[in-house]
Length: 133
Image (cartoon, rainbow, N blue to C red; front, side, top):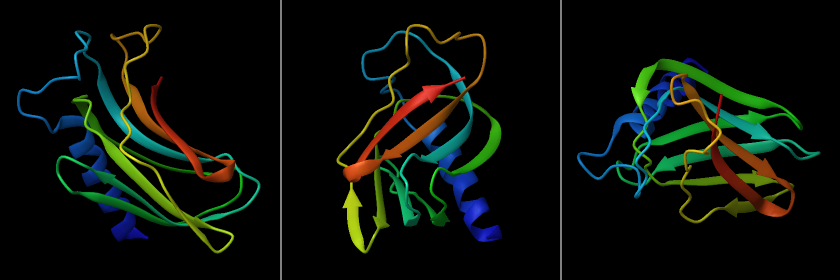
């Protein structure tokens, strides 16, 4: 459990800060993030959840999230760089994986306040990543 938390903190920091000069995929707005949240929005538990930051190859893993539950971690504020992520998990004996995903900065986010990177896993193997305050 301690290793999972440490790995999550490291990966979230890398998700937030990696990216020498590439910027936010054409976005001119910048925001700081200080956390990572993975939400299970299904009626069944998730197992072996992995989030991979494409640019760095760093992986966050979580063994189990109850139905309707969350996994979260916080870290020191970092400038969000817009790196792509891939997410995989098991549910009901099936393996699921996303393709490359990006979290865009929503127009209604207050760039003066910190945000969290949020992965939402839904039914039928659907997942998305977003930024929330």
